Amino acid sequence: MNSRQLLSRAMTTAALLLSLAVSAQAGPPLICHTFDIGPAKSLPMVDWNRVVASNYDLRNLAGDTVAILDSDAPVLVRMETLRRATIYARQDPQAAKELLTRLQARAANSGAAGHPDALAWFDLGYLVETYQQWMGRGEPNPAAGLDGYALVKKAIGLRGEDPEMELAAALITLSGPESDHRDHARKALAGAKADPLLARNLSSNLHNQSIAKLLAGDTEGGMGR
Image (cartoon, rainbow, N blue to C red; front, side, top):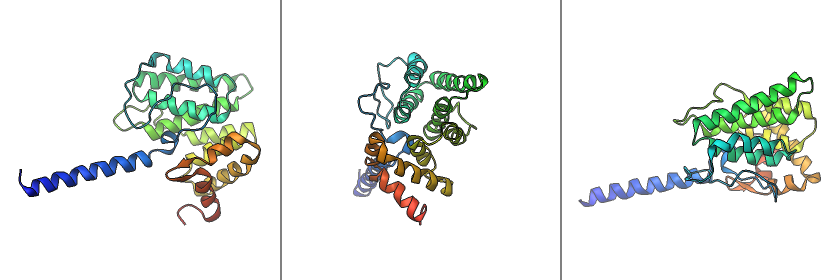
């Protein structure tokens, strides 16, 4: 191998390493960022940026996830649980479809009973958004064509003031709509004063800055300004 070939290979390797480093730091925000849930129960921890050879039985994914969601878990615990569920679901199209179908039926059944469950609609909407961010890259996406953000907004309307839901909506709308994003961000930041778990999560880092700083920047000057 001559010097030109060696240089070309070295440059290719460097570019690949840089690409991997950037990907690790700036992955999909609903997937790459681990939410602080304290001692609360969730699915087993899973690394977002690799195909995991895990001993977790994916046949249990839908049942385990719904059991956690049905335990009156706080919204941030739901967000972290659905984040982990999506990473697992990407490994098995059948598990992915079953989980989505279970959450769709759960939300629809609550509405049919005449008492729509805000949390059930939130769970469905947030799962749709995590699927949109993490599937469709060669894997079938059972949530294709669904609008998870609209479902999350519906949940907020049903539940009323909930800063943790506002954080979820602010993260979903990081790339727009801009006015909606700023509104959700303001409400999430304001609610942190009375929610220690939310405050801890706002102080955590996403893409090399705290979530609070990221959201505050958007509320002050608008996105990309």
